[in-house]
Image 1: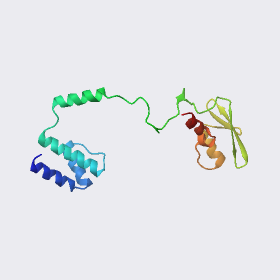
Image 2: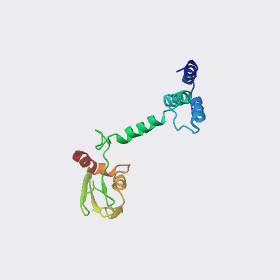
Image 3: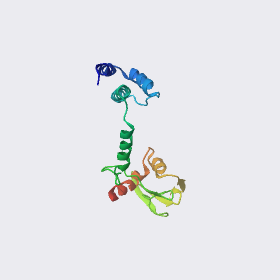
Image 4: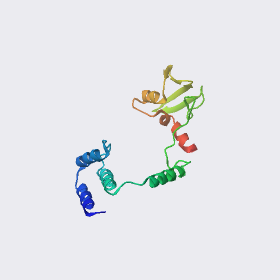
Length: 158
C-alpha cells in the first residue's frame, strides 16, 4: 500500500458517521442503510483501496463463487435456535383436537374453553385466538398458549 493511500485511510478514521455515509454514497453510488461507524469505515476504506490498487481478478471472483456454491449448508438448527410451531392446514399443532376442553384455574375461577375448528368457545362466546380469550379472562394481555400451559408442552417435546 502506498503512502498516499495510507494517509487517505487515516483521514477516514477521523470521520464521523455523517461524513462516512457521504463518502459511502460517493464511492458506491447508493445510500448506506447502516449507521454503524466501524462498518462504514471498513466498507469505505476497502472501496478506496480497491479503486486504488485494483479489484479482484475475474479468476478470483469465479473461484470465490465456486467456494461459496460448494460450501456445506447447515441441515440442523444451531443449538438454542428458536423453534417455531408447525402449522398444518392452517391449524397450530400445539392445539389439542377439535372438541377438546382446555381447563385452567385462574384466581379461584375455573376457566373451561372448548376448542373449535376455527377458534374457541368460552361461556357461550366465540374467540378467534387463545390470546384474546386469555386477555378477556384476566383483564390484561396474555399469550394464550402460555396461559393454558400449551407452550410448555411444545418446549418439553423439543
